[in-house]
Every structure is written in C-alpha cells, then in structure tokens.
Image (tube, rainbow, N blue to C red; front, side):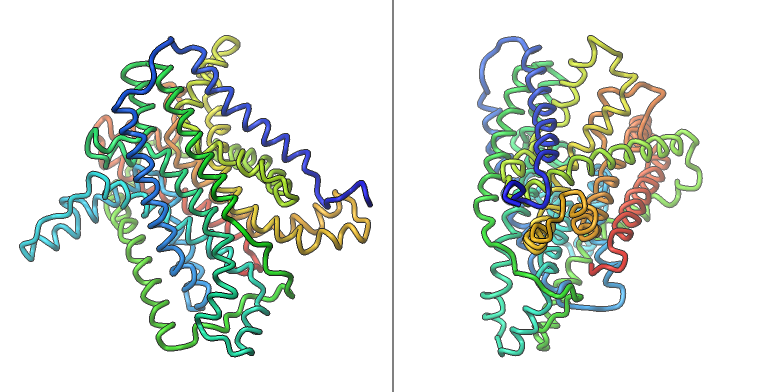
Length: 517
C-alpha cells in the first residue's frame, strides 16, 4: 500500500506529454535549423503581437462572460428540446472556420440580413471588418465551447448541495457565494485559457475579417513569412513567441483555478432547488433565447445557401468526404490514446502535464506541418504520408480541448474513489476499467465527438502535403471556390456541416446515454 500512493499510474501520461512536447518543439527546431540567420522582429511584427493579445483577451473575456449566465440558465431549467438545443449550441465551435465566417457575413455583413433590415430604416450597414469583426467571429465560434465547459462544471456539483441550501433557506446571493462562486473559480480560469489560446492562433478569422495591416495576428505573420517571403527564421521566432504567450496564460489559469471539489454525492441526477422565482425564470429564458438566436441565425444562413447545390454535388466531393471521415477516425483514436492517460496523470497531481497539453493549441499548425515536411523528406516522400500526418496534427490540435473536458471529471473521480480503491487494495488496472473509465464515459464521448468534428472540418496542414489526387472535404471546397464553382462549394459546405454535426452528435450522445447532460 505504501508504495502505491495513487490509484492510477502517471507513467503513460508522462509518456504522452513527452511525445507531444517532442513533436511540437522538434518541428519548431527543424524549421529554425533550416532557417537562414537573420535579424529579430520588426515593428510590424510587434504590432501584430499587440493586436493578437488584445483580440484574444477581448474574445476570451466576452465569450466566457456570456457563457456564465447561459450555462447557469441551462443548468437550472428543464424544458422540451433542451438536449437538442445544447447540441445545436455546440455546432458553431465544430464548424469549419471558413464556413462559419460565411454564415456570419450572411447575417452581419455589409449586405447581410441585419444590414438590409437597418437599410429599410435609413441606417448605415454594419461594418464587420477590423477588431470588432474578429472578436465577433471568435465569440460566435467559442461561446458554445465555453458554455459546455462551464455547464459541465455546474453538473459536477452534487444535487444534495442544492437541496441542503434550499432547506437552510439560502437566498440567491448566499447560493452564489457558497456554491456557485467556488465552482466558477475552478472552471473559469481553464475556460479562459483555452479560448485565449484558440484566438491566439487565429488564422482564417484574421485573414478574412482583419481588414488590413492594423489587424494582423501572429499567425498571419507566420503565414506571410512562409508563403510570401519563405523567411523560416522569422516564422520560427514568431511561433516560439506564440508558444511562450499561450504557456504563460496556461500557467496563470492553473494558478487561479483554486478549490478541491464539492465532495461526494449519491450520483443522483442534478435537480436545482434555486432559481424558482418568476424573475429568475424570466432571466434564464432571455439568456437562452439570446444565445440561441445569436448562434443559430448564421447556421440557418449556411443551410439556406447550401441547399440549392447539394443535390448536384460531383463525385469528387463525396470522395473527399470519405477521405475526411477516414482521417478524422484515425485522428480521434490518436487523440484518446494521448488525452486519457494525460488526464489520469493530472488527476493525481502532475500539473506540469496540463501545461504540456496546451502546447498543441499554442503552436502553429503551419510550423508543425513545415517541420514535419523537413524531417520526413530525407527518409520518405512526404506526399505519400499526407493523410497520416494530417491525422496526427489534427489530434494534436484537438488535444487541449479534450484535456479541458476530461481533466475536471478525472480529478473528481480520483478524489471520490481513489482512497477507497487503495483501501480495498485494488490494483491500477481494475480501478481503471471498473471505476475510472465507466465514470468518464460522458466526457470521453464529448471529447471524441469534438475531436472528430474538428478533424473533419480542418483546413490546415493538408494544404502543405496534399497532391491533386488526394483531398479532404474542406480542401475540396476550397478548390471549388478557387475555380468559382460557388454553388457546388456551398453544397459541399452544407455536406461538411452535416458530417461535423452528425459525427459529433453520435459520439457525444453515445457517451451521455443514461447520463445527465
């Protein structure tokens, strides 16, 4: 007993974290090694750094700030179609970014629905380009993720806590101070760190909505260094700076995430005993309605524009869809093989692994792809390994999101049942299969669905490796748009939306079967 202080082993978690660090830092080193010696960052580069931090901070604060009342309302209310609404609210985050931006332009653009409505009253159209457009797109894409992360934390509070608070006559301020605020102190820092890191590595959003040199991000600077200047040294320097900023944000978030959980309960379904006043019901209804309207209107625009071209999609689009499903399946398996042991290790107090888990989000996929190209080329043809490399990088990019989903539940399981398992002299294997994994089922399904959807919709490293005969669905849509086949591209975008949502729903629903959402 003395030699086995934890119910799960941290060794596999350290192994997965070591491989992740070697992949990210090794590819960055490969790019820097091939780079020519040059100077430091220019004034334009530092301006891009400042804009990146500004837009990422604003996007994270607004996304998480809006997610708190929305998640609170969803946790307190039960109504017909609640599960479907929660699933639909998650759609924007799993959308391919370029498709999401298309929907936002249809609604909020200069010729969009809202601008047309304003024009009937003689008002000026909305200007969506620039800082406010970038922040709007990031809030649209990340509000659902922040809501799900905070909602998941709310559901970890034992139902007995709320019942006891009601029996003791706690009013709303006391309920917030004693139950909800401790919860938020644990959940919010991690959600802020994840959204900040997502916005830090923004590429397509800044490229399409940035509006000029004054709205250039670090990722755009890396892209320009690769595509137009082939300045690998500058690209490596910018990527390293991006990793340092995201890592610093992760360390601050971990330090601020205080608390030791809410104790054990009887595993009853969450039943809220607060928020029964008319004002509370009205407030919750308004928050849910506003969030649903903001998130679902662009989705409706995507569907409306994609239906006409859906029936006549060429065979090459369906073939690309099959390739995307194949790559996404492999990527999801790799994701779970890395995320589960890392989450188990973090649950036993290995907090350094949690910082390593954010490396995939902080690093630029362009730099990782180029580094892998440099490393593979001397020993094999990189183009023959396009799909495996794409699956690996997609898993790496999805890992930080999976970690934020899995870690809180893993900590709770180890806290609740770890000492009991050790007192029963339960070995690590039986504890893993009989206690840990069954109680992680809902979170595993959510993480797998999210990883699958993100991989299906990714348009990143595949552009560096793919040849004319191999294409994922996002790349094929991009090619159709480049050849001005806009109706087929819109139909392909609708197919991509259906695949992303469908696979996410199947895996998430499978994990939550007989579990509280």
